[in-house]
Image (cartoon, rainbow, N blue to C red; front, side, top):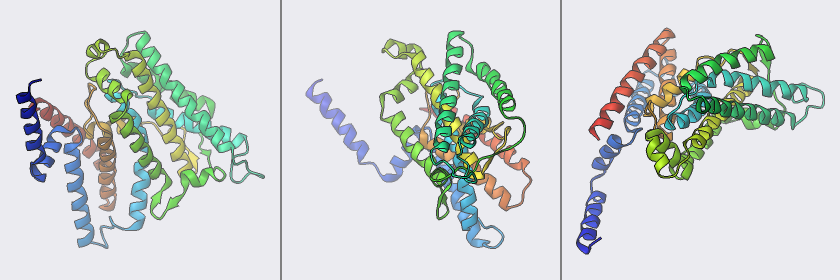
Amino acid sequence: MSASQSAHIHAAIAARNERSFAAKAIDWIRTRPEGGIAVLFVVVQVACVIGALLFPTSFRYLSEANIAVLLKSIAPIGIMALGVGVLMIAGEFDLSVGALYSFCAIVAATLSNQWGGDVGAEGASALAPFGGLLIGLAVGTLAGVIHALITLRFNIPSFITTLGAMLLWKGATLLYHGASSLRFKPSEPFNTIFNGSIGVVHASIIWFAIFAVIFYFLLHHHRIGNHFFAVGGNQKAAIAIGINPARTKIIAFAIAGFMAALSGIIAGARVSSIQPGGGLGLELVAIAACVIGGHALMGGRGAILGIVLGTCLMYTIQDVLLLLRAPGFYFEMFVGALIVIAVIMNMAIRRKN
């Protein structure tokens, strides 16, 4: 590179850094996958806060009880969506995460209870719930690996593989436990770690935040994150630079299964019981959170912040509708419309860029 070319590049970088804050913000919104949802999220939050201040008795959005309930609702789907989002970036889907959410939680709770991990058991074991947790997470991870191997070995769409797996794990849940709910009141310190609170902040939202930070560094500051984006964006180009797409996708599927299991176990510990069909339909909510957060349906594009904001926005709207006493189907209508709008906006931004 000549001296004149180097000077020109340095001048361009300096001019870019000297732009106004507004110009940088607009550029970030236009270029980042989570840019559009960030603006919408801020607008919705501002509107909710103004509404709560103007009508404090009829619209209790800022009350401690409402905030506590809202945070508890966000965490399980947010945790699941982190795994689903990583898999979508790698260019695949997993429709079985909702069924795994229930199955792995029931496996963990059953083993914990059998090993004396219930808080009401005489001489309750402190280690039993953690043993159940490890087995449940292992089952979820192994299920993800199996989904990946079937998809890759037989070269079939992951949508089809995991659609069948969803029905399989749903049936396995009923075969393993039956249709009745399962008590899950684990002993200490498990209960405090996963079901404790600091003020209005429940332990589940803390775990969501922890894993969001971990996944942020995994995706944006680690080699495996680059592999996910490369494989999902252009698999042939990824192979050309030495990336193994099969290994990368197996890891992504395993992460999705692990996070689905963790989500189910944390949710079960929060409500002290597990419903065999409690996770059905959550896979679509998790995918919706990722799409709303800026993930491309074809892979290769997405951000952890987008997943977090997409999940928070969906449950903020649900909370607002509940506070306004609107019918439940309004939430589904809004989410459906928001998904379509988000995809249109993402496609328009990508074409413009």
